[in-house]
Length: 213
Image (cartoon, rainbow, N blue to C red):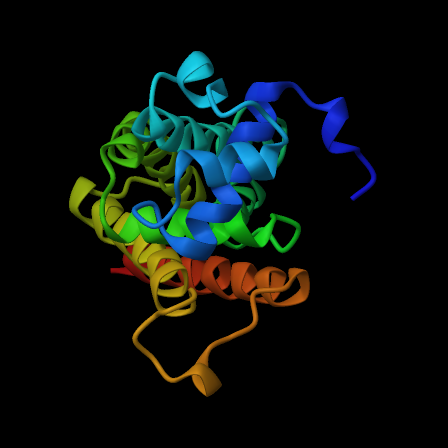
């Protein structure tokens, strides 16, 4: 770590210390004193900055989610001059990186998948907020890639295929996923690029097939 803990604000130190402890020990087994000790803060700091441990937990999730949205805005390329297929590839890649960013601290990945699986209200709000915009964007790209009239049912089937393939890797190759460890793919940068290309090529072939009918 190149940045000293004293260089960060008290609230940020509390968020990061709480995140590490929540990932290691769980929310229920982590005390406010544990968090303050790890953050090098006064024991009253949690109440002062956040109100209580539950609100600090929400702040930790918000810290993770906002970092993901900033680093991997899935619709970032939609306004570019890239071909539709390249735009779709960027969206697929960012979907995967939002979950499997190899550079993300381990504690963030652990909390993210735990809260995703338990459908925490904070993540539900974010998912709903972004889903509509991203789904509409993908539908537009599918129609552009088709290059001709394609009915709404075919577009929705292609959309479901894209989302389903991404979710397969997000859910089945995450920590604690219900498949044997030896079958899991290591989600490093190289494999994420390979999977992205596979999903894109599979999708392009599917769109082509729909247009030929």
